[in-house]
Image (cartoon, helix red, strand yellow):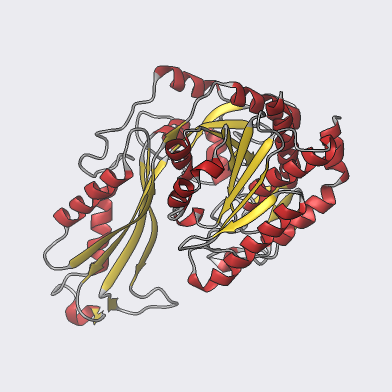
Length: 453
């Protein structure tokens, strides 16, 4: 056992209690009612970063605050910029949680709470790794900068201007982000590709008020009926999106990459059983990994219309709304896709209703280098923490700031996943394996040691 591992083992309980304290704060960035909680979470992060010897400042934006910290030990040494986010998704539906979403509970080997894996548990493992390295070596082995924001779950809308404004202060050699997952249990991964995102809301309006379906059905358009037909037209058939022009810029999966995906230990039948679905579904001609990592998708995220309470109410709703997202791949542009979707929805909308299309937020797809000294250092650090070499994967999720760092700072990101694919990010009973939290601390401390070499 290395000195780093010995230190982390000796301070496991302290590290766990601190994470549990962080998880009690309901920092839901999408909900204005939680604005004070988001502010309180930023203050908590500020104080914890100060407590481990970093110089800390809370940076104000038109939205939620960003916490910035740094420790410059030697200008001649490499500098790593750690990014994470302290905001979390809404906890709904509340009735599906076994415990309160902000009452972190240990269930066997897991810690269950909203934000446990996305991203409080993961970014805080990196913070604790900085502390571990500092205490084991007497000082952090290389320069560190930390940027923890509070708006990732709403598209990081104010982060890009802040990065532009602070680009001199943020100047670094590499960005480190832990906001994804391992490939499988005990199989660490370095993520080299992320999907982009285009998120849209469609509202269909009919009569000025809800109507009796018997008295008015068949005489006026039902917005719920219209909306479902429009969404279906966008979805297309056989897993292929039906929006004209949607695939024009899609970069095909290269042969070497398809072969690399096949070499990974992935069992489609086991995947199906774990999800408890009757059959897997997706675009024809592609494997599940290819669909999830390297093919674009269209998915409804929410539908709101009419009567949804207990029992029956024969109502013809006056309005229907749908929220849907499209995950994008290189070289798709979220702004272009939003325009294509908007034009298509207006084209297919019947004259009997009015529609409104809103583009809520987006992110560009990402591919980062698989080679280089920083990547090699990350490979050694993950091997040290997990006891086996990491694999290289792509991810279906989006991290908008990765492109911002590349465009504004000219640096690539190291994407390491500490969670598990079935941790339930964004879902009820989200969890984080406690052992992986400790491994994340070891990984961060080891990475700083490796980068210093």
